[in-house]
Amino acid sequence: MLPPKERTISYPERPFFELWRDHGPTWRDARVELNQRLAFPAACFVFALIAVPLGAQPRRGGRAAGSLLAIIIIAFYYLVLVTGAGFARQGVVPVPIGMWAANVVIALIAFALFPRMERYRGEARTPHILIRLSALWRLFRRRTARVRPRHAVSRAVNGESSHPSYSSLPSILDLYLLRQFFYFFLVIMVAFIFLFEIFTFFELAEDIRRHNVPFMIVLDYFRYLIPYSVYQFTPLGALVAVLVTLGILSKNNEIVAFKASGISLYRLAIPILLAGCVIASALVILDDTYLPYANQRQDELRAIIKGRPPQTHTRPERWIFGENSKVYNYDLFDPKERLFGGLSVIELDPDTFQMRRRIYATRAEWLDSENTWALESGWVRDFTNGTVTRYSPFKVTSLPELIEPPSYFNREVIQAFQMSWRELRRYIAGLRSAGFDVSSLTVQLHKKFAYPLIAPISMMLAVPFALFVGSRGAIGGLALGVGIGIAYWALSALTEAMGGIGQLPPFLAAWSPDLVFFFLALYFFFKMPT
Image 1 (tube, helix red, strand yellow):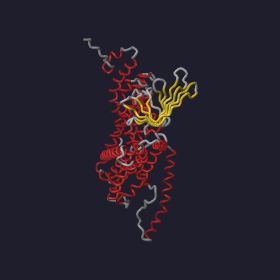
Image 2: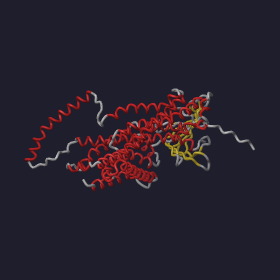
Image 3: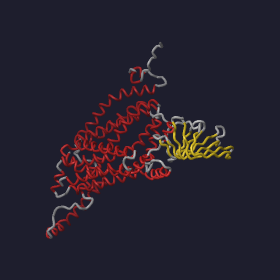
Image 4: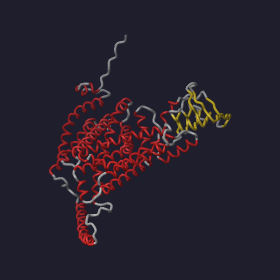
């Protein structure tokens, strides 16, 4: 029996003075661990330092706003800490600077906020140009106010109502609602993206350490992951922002004041719904321009972090090197059915890199029983010094040199979210003409328009629900918004799966969740007491 192998002690398990005395090849990792043990306890004082000026400032969100702000600060601290640790391990910055940067940045922000504690809310040093513009605006308002009594008298003589009119867009009320909505929308989106990025980092932390991934690759991955996070969380963020905004207004009885002024809740909802349409349009533009490229880049970088070969996504037709000096090119590869469409295989001379043989098949299927590819409707050409010496067409055949199994090509599958809707539409047209089932891809094509449209639909649904959670304020709106978002994602995943296997038409599979939530929104929207 062999003696048990002595286990290597990791850096977190080593005592303090042993890390201090480490001057070997891995001294930098030891110093990072040593400074981290000192910086973490000091972070308690730093967080208490920034909590004093932030807690002393009153804010409309109450406990929910304070909780979101705390999450953002903690996420920011860990982001700076992880970035500094990565730079310190790479030798870009000295180890103490990299490990203490997060504490120093939070402390500087706290010291910058301390003078604000002695000011009243809204008191700030306004730049001179803003003061002049504010004075001009007040002068304009006073001049227009002199004209309003004449119109009011004429309306009274004609028997018209003297209530203020809010039919024009945008009114002061609209700007007030939009300012509140976009404030909470930005705060919620930042919180969601930070949490998603942090959880993703902890998920990949072991792979980063195991494969010794350079820190700049990790930074690039999370940079390209942000557009995907924005696209995925924007409808949920808009929904929660409406619930929080109107919930706080209802809790503060501002909704009652609007009703007493003769303003209908339908009129209040107009600027919010218009903002939802703008958000949906922005998502469609993002998905058609930058998002496919960002998704391709972050998938390539994730493959490197996971220790897999990076993907290439220049066009839907892909090239990949095989074994024994072969190069594969194909229009489609379906890993589930283990099928190729438009397969070309080029065999090269390893010494001269000249083409020796080219194989083409319109369709190829993997046979487990024979451990080879069954080629259909193609041909084989042999070359000698660039001249065709043999041409052999076939209907069905198999070649022993094609030994790469389907698992060899799994890393090269392009996804629908890595293409714009125009590219995906052309891709689907080519596959359909080749006789392949494109139900799943057609569902994804429709979802490129259906998913952004759920933003205004969910915001319409949030308007009546915000009145129900008005007494609970922002916390109740946040909980209800997450619940509605989970219900939509579950229904969307179910209908998408049914459309992929042919149980639902692709159009209905993609648009069913939107239709269901749209009719629910209409029902509750017109049932609310205005």
